[in-house]
Length: 273
Image 1 (tube, rainbow, N blue to C red):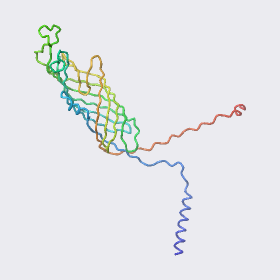
Image 2 (image 1 turned 90 degrees about the horizontal axis):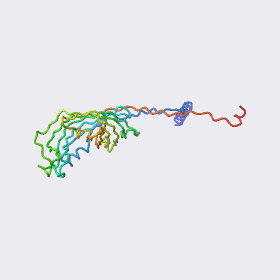
Image 3 (image 1 turned 30 degrees about the horizontal axis):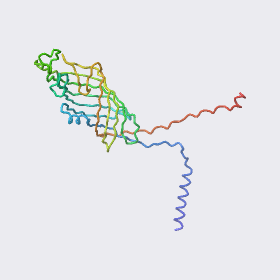
Image 4 (image 1 turned 90 degrees about the vertical axis):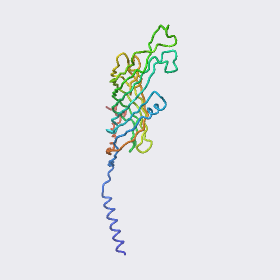
């Protein structure tokens, strides 16, 4: 029994001696490897189905998505379709469809592609975003002139309203438009891999193919077109799901080393010099 105690005491003494002989590294670096998920986030815009439910003259659907390229940079895009009926009112009866000077329907699809830059500093494992970005957008659509009235100052034959047009209404197809968008928005994780997003957009119209004897007052994806201005505004509220594809290691940041400056000379030293 005594020999066992002596052996254990000898082993402990040898171990403590070896540990004390090892130098202590006061500048050890963090070698932990942090891996963050990279993948595809896809979803839909919630505002367009809601407007489709509330308004009879509109139907629309938009899919949204982004793919993480680096720690801060994302490839992003939107793909959608819109159909809207617009009436321009100028008659006496302005509360019903019969008061429209003309009534037309726009239908078409659009695609937006660009990048988003995340300005938010996430904790490890998070992918929340407060971002700014840009898009190049392209839309192809058609317009149908449903009915129209002849604008005539002389109201002798129709004092109550303008005279309805009798010529064949127009169907204009093959129309296109393109524009640039500046985007600001947020994406926040509400449950695991499920994100709620919101964004505001300022668009600048680059090209706009107008039909003969008519003009585009609404472009799918761009929104309303106004006279004398190429700017448009838009927004979306999205729900999306992240599909993790792989994880990429993020190296720990190197600590910043502050340079030490020499203290200023004392007054007596300055006078001696």
